[in-house]
Image (cartoon, one colour):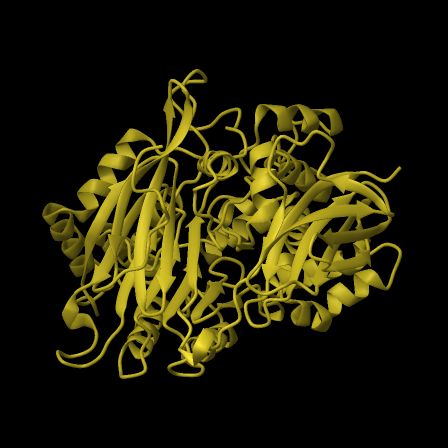
Length: 582
């Protein structure tokens, strides 16, 4: 009998017609996968095969707008989800109401959109992580804790979408359980050691992460959007041209990057797409046209690794009058020291067009990028200083200072937007253009993770529209990790980086690197917060609120403890519903 190996994951819910969704599953053999909803909506398709694994992204049609309906998954007409005696509530698909007039002709209230986000989740702590000891775990998993709360508290308000902003799996920091499986396949004394080496080993990471019972239920009932960061492939992926040359010289890198992109396309990227985008995707069509899609996916991934400009991983999602632009800030970087760019030219053009399209059509613009745009000022100046040294501002591109800059860049992870100074400036200019004028949205929020702590940063008022000119509120919202850790010295370092002394040290570095005065100044308006955590934006009309919850252990279990809950606009919608400890 055909069994369900992994999933289901509820991925896309259409906010325009409110009648369509997609559900991702992995079966243990070829079959027809079907989703049947209690309200009569349904969808089915044949699985496609990659490296002996069998997947389907089922398009469900006929959903009722403004409703919540339970669903089942069948493989070859046999129900496999939910399993018998399942201890969690039914997996459901929730659709938004269709915009329109209310009863009696009055204007309908705008829909509330709740967007939860975070990044950096170890499914299980690695065998040799940066924890003080094996007996000192990293603390409760924020996704596990959120799932438990939503499953057990009927009054808890669910997010409408979950944004996972990178490091969904850790290819380079495997758990003890995964290492035992790797050791059964090959000699871990040979490169790449206890890191994953190929597609089959990547599937072990997704098994470990998505089979977690609480997370499995959560992802089956809350739609999700995903984008990779470095650990989905390797730490500091695409830091610099020197880094890339070094990794390409190894015997194992080609298989690693090809397998990483193959698995990302299958497990994460496909579900980011709408049904119309799926129908137009040539690779999705190709894998369904053959009994074994392995070579088609491998050719695609190898081509994307050799020439990243051939593939766009970035995408757009619309939630009523909320526009989300998820940006790939890893795979397609331009690494030439004299032309460094976070995004290639065509990707920048896509981002600009998507951000500026249909002025006045959105109340809130969200830009999801795994790496923060605005960092603590000292870190920002250090990254710009390092980039200046590497391009030869002190002694030329082959001089001693260039070598110092490259060494610091690689050892200290100096590779965020600030390390690509012209890209930082162009993104700033784009945000300024979106945020100014009578048709500007109420907020422009850059959502990021990566740095293993959370904070809110905001440009100084003078950075954008002149006084008395309509302008959006612009915010950098950084939330990380979901389940990971940060050493105590780094906590102290991040706090210092926001301080007056840290700013002064940053200006000295800028003077030495001849980077010039900053094009914009910003300040911290919340945080830093340390721990396993999630942020949630609650958006309704032109109103916005932000909350931050942290997973805490208690004598009776783990809870989400409110650390921050404040409006971002003059008037604010109800928050995530976590104003008290529970």
